[in-house]
Image (spheres, helix red, strand yellow):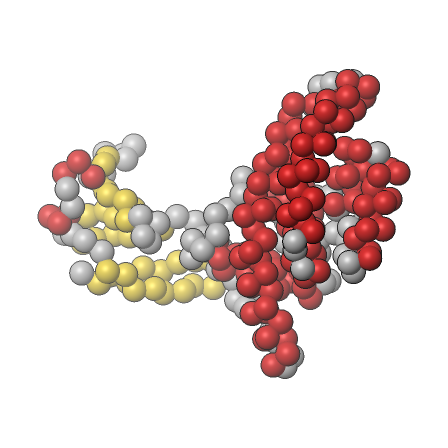
Length: 231
């Protein structure tokens, strides 16, 4: 059975609102196992189409598709073929760096939660105990990244935390350590003080587009709080 469903999507970075029609093959209720049919708060029966991330209702002998909220993003405008190639290049780098970023973000947030209500001296002591383990775990992985992958990692951390990697290190280990980490980063052409700004930075604009596209089609999992970033 083919049913047309219209999505109303916010196109990020001020591109406006537009409708996008997509055609799906879905099962009728007679094709769905009885245990998969659920009832919502109004008493209406539905089942979940996991592939298309939708609820399928049968109302007055018509199949009604209710989609989860999605953000659809048009690809940014490319000035030339080099821009298109760079976009595809960043996509490959994003796919490689993203799992490492997810792990690092989770551990950073866990450390933040554990030390949130501690005084400065105790917080510093706890961080000192854990930083050796984290450094040993990530130093080899980060050294294995190319310059572009290192930049993508820094950009993702900045998007998720609202801070540059320099600020994160400064908060956890102090200004002197952050200074030296930035020196090391600059040697590899990575500015750890650089934040995330898709409005004014071409690389960030491309990354934002790639993230939204990858999340929409399920190629990459969203990290908690991903939608709270204000584009």
